[in-house]
Length: 341
Image (tube, rainbow, N blue to C red; front, side, top):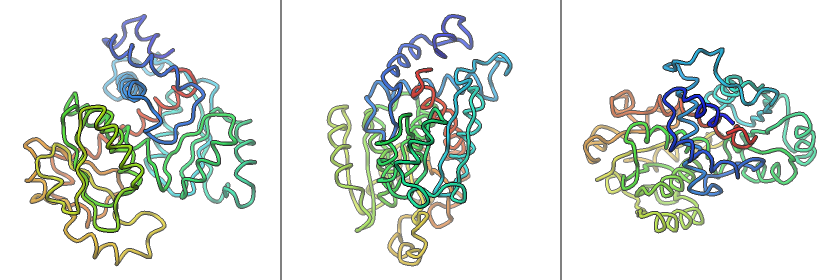
């Protein structure tokens, strides 16, 4: 196992506490990864710590020669199905799988049309015979669920209209790298109540954060997922606050997060959404209502109406470390699913 091999040689100043946390990942072997709420708190902790170990081992600041770095996924492969275009998901998965010794295969819309030329069930069965993992970035969450029903290898949800769990891991890793322990910190979401928010508020609640959410009327988060978040917040010492006023959500927060107001497939709603999201732009005036030392996150791609350059490129912005973490975190998920954490 990766963590055990570092522990035995005490490479990179190995942290025994992180080794113990990653041992909780043994239960993820062979499992699908569809949303953050499927993880126990211990598994979430383990994935974040393993991601940090991978960054220390394979990252640009690593003192370990690349030829000596462990290759725990040698002989393994991941097929990557993309109904939607992607930059970070594709590059992070392909590069990360290569660093771990495995191979990634890209299947775009021109290569495979889920449920069109071939049924979802048949696609899942065929790819399961070729690949060790199937990662899929789809429009409807039902497609991910259908794949998971029939695949005999682990599925990774790389984005659906309901969940985006890989992004949450990257976000939480960026926040822990910056703040350390996140318990008691307040995360403010300003914008659409979408898939990115769904997993982020669940993950934040699991780590004991307070979650403030501001969404325009008609763009609220999924009510079932809000209920899950409230329950997790109660269990972990946090609170959930919902509002339609951006200022109210941001006041007293430590983290301000937004995302695109118009997702892929919603282009025809652009004018309507821009009008209804008036007052939700993250700018220096809004950030000033947050606590001293507050930071800004955006999962990218970013559009100018969502956040000003003054905030986006400021020292408060963690968007590029956040983007880099997409690789370390998907590496951790794949290794855990294949029993190599």
